[in-house]
Each structure stands twice: as C-alpha cells, then as structure tokens.
Image 1 (cartoon, rainbow, N blue to C red):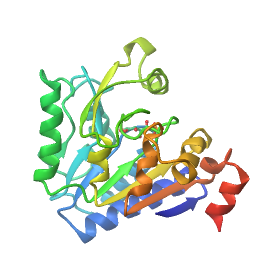
Image 2 (cartoon, rainbow, N blue to C red):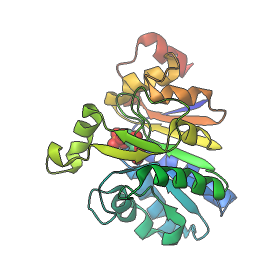
Image 3 (tube, rainbow, N blue to C red):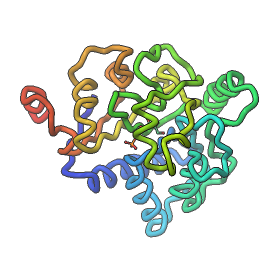
Image 4 (cartoon, rainbow, N blue to C red):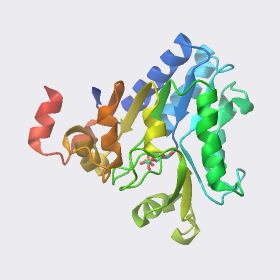
Amino acid sequence: MKILVVKNKDELSRKSAEAIIDTVKQNPSAVLGLATGGTPLGTYQNLIRDRQENKTTYQRITTFNLDEYVGLDESHPNSYHQYMRTNLFDHLDIPRENTFLPDGTASDLEREANRYDKLIESRGGIHLQILGIGENGHIGFNEPGTPFSSQTHIVELTESTRKANARYFSSLDEVPTHAITMGIASIMKAKKILLLVSGEKKSQALYEVLHGNITEQVPATALRNHPALTIIADEAAFQNMPRQAGQLIFQ
Ligand code: F6R
C-alpha cells in the first residue's frame, strides 16, 4: 500500500488527476473505474483542464462507474449517469458508447448486475479504479456487512448514506432507497486502486482502512489486501486520528 498525504483537497484533486492522466498516456486503451460523489469532483475538473490545455485524448478509453441509484432514469438530474456527463464526459473526447454505468431502471436488476460484471470482464477488466469512501467505510454502495465475495448487486441504502446524499436532492424522501453497485470482489479485481480520502469526517474510516481489523463491518478494510492500492488523503482526513496512527503514517 502506498499512502500519499497531501495538504488539502486541491492537492488531492491535482495528484489524483495526474495518476489518471499517466494511466491514459501509458495505455491509451485503458479501462478506468470511476466514482461519483463530492470527493472526485476536483479530480474531474483537473482532467477537463488538462484536456483543454494539453489535449490528452480519451478516444480509446473505456470507463465503468461503480454504481447507480435504482429507479432513477439516466436523464434524472440526480442520476449518476447525469453526474458523469455534466462533470466529466461532456468535456472530454471520450465516445459516449465507451462509458458504462449500471442501469438502475432495468426491469430485471439481478440480471443487470450480472451483465455488468460480465461486461467489465469482456473489456479486459479495470486498469485503474478510483474510489471515494463513506463515513461508515462504504465503498461504492457496499454498506457495512456486505460480503467481501460480493459481485455487482442490488443494495438497500442505510439511513446514514441516504442522509449524506440528501444534499443533492430537495428532500430526504426523494433519495432512492436502493442502488446497484459493483461488489467488493468486483472492485478488488481492478489491477490498481486509487482511494481518495478528504476531510475530517472521513478520518475514522481512514483509520480503519489503515489500522483496523479487516472486517466486512467496514467494507473499505478489504482494500488492505489489494496488491496495488494507493491512498491519497489530505491532512484533514488525519485529524481525529489517534496520535499513534498519525505517527505511523508520517514515518
Ligand atoms: C460514489 C460512491 C460512494 C462515494 C462515497 C463518498 O460513486 O461510490 O462510495 O465514493 O459515498 O462520497 P463523497 O465523495 O461525496 O464523500
């Protein structure tokens, strides 16, 4: 595991974008695993700026997103399809048909979940997976208790995750109750993983990833077993961490 401690969110955004750009330059046909949420927004802005300034091309890149809400049409303003278009895809030269997200409106969701894992495999698997982390240690929408062996599947969202995501909706009632997400095992298949952790609110989750027991109760702890995990975390994410942990990290 490599840990890069950065001063703040801006630096996290720059460094993570550099890692993605390096991957794209080294392998112009790379398959990227992407996340939504607040954390990677700055990363995506840096990718867009780099595209404008340096003309990095994504014409042969393929992307797979981690998750999507169940019941939201892809044109719904709060769907992750829409988030990805607005915040990234519309500003790159990536062909729309190379960008994949699970379909949360599929009539047979189990089948859709299966199809999604097979599709990732058929494209040769993910080279670099970008991840954020929930305050409770979730990755994707894999909430505490999700088996480490899980493939893409349907989940019922916890109250804490629905509340955390309510900021994007006009009320908590509007936040969907279910989502379709890549499972822990699907995520762990990525050749490289880049976990982004920013802010004080994530410090407990970060502590668990670095020092806690590897347990299904904290899904992100599975990542410790990944052979090519890099964590970029800002100083705020180390805030409430016990002194001992902080020392270990900075050694
Ligand atoms: C998003 C996702 C989630 C987020 C997590 C953190 O596709 O899979 O696991 O990464 O909820 O969200 P933010 O970045 O908003 O704190």
